[in-house]
Amino acid sequence: MHVVPLTELGDGEFESALRLQQRVELSIDPATPPITAPELRRFAEDDRTEGNRHERFAVIDGAEARALVHVESEMDEDNLHRANVQIYGAAADPEAGLEGLRAALDLAEADNRTLITGWGPENDDERAFWTRAGMSLGLLERVSALDMVAVDGALMDRWIADGQQRATDVRIERWVGACPDELMTPWIESLLAMNDMPFEDLDINAWDIDEDDVREEEDAMASLGIRVANMLAVDDKGRAAAHTRVHVNPARPAASYQWDTAVTHLHRGRGVGKWIKADMWRWLRQTEPDAIRLTTGNAQSNDAMLAINVAMGYVPVLEFAAWQAPTETVRAALS
Image (cartoon, rainbow, N blue to C red; front, top):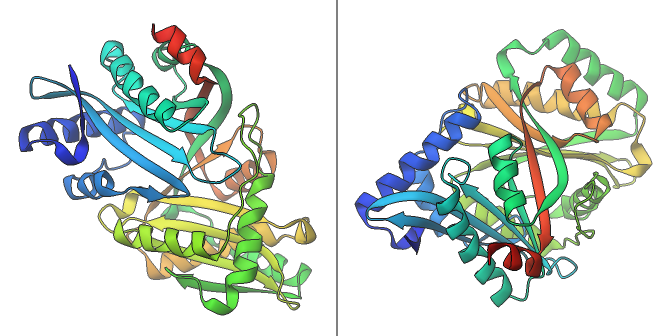
């Protein structure tokens, strides 16, 4: 077995890697269409999105891809100790998974990362793989799916009307892609409210975000072919009240993703969260009718957002988990 960056795979190796990732994705969520070849090639070339630097590689045996590894190195100055790892195929082929994890650990240590966090479905095989590497559970996340067509439109109308009545000083702005310059300050203010979400036992510090970070992320999403639908609630003093974002995937509209949603401290308890989620649903049904299914993830301890999602019609698909350990602990376990 040897490790090869996805961008350097031969045609046969790439086809094997694609089949592997498709099999894993379908085993996790059979209702979501799996990744396509053009998407996988774009992701292979993606070196920085979501505030992380990315490395993606395959564990190859002959011409067969036995595991796929994605390493995210956080670039926020207060989280430079962290490296996140996801390994496709590790549960079914632990030896190939461990080979991939060794390569990920080499990258992390060369970059002076001191903590490894492994992400994957919460099941017996995944748990056995990560605990074999010396890691312990840090977070449980519920992954849920929403049938956009089946949502109760009358309920959404009531949520919108209730929010408008209770927060008369708030308006909602909408755009796709790049944030308008005049909304950048409240947009960043609302994005920073995501630091209030529960991280459970994960060793994560609060992130900082500035305009350069926002513009870099917008450019990266556009290069990946993702249309990002954005909503921002702003009060009459120009302060952020809430935001929500959906990543619409033109290649697989039914694989679109409800990204982050946050309500700022000043405006919590006024129905703004339900209002903006309902307004996003209504907007997407008008502008993205092929986005018939959204998936999303929430920490199991995030009671407030889970309550909104459940009431909206999201149903659990699986549990996702994060396991973590210091790099030196993982190195000792792999030895």
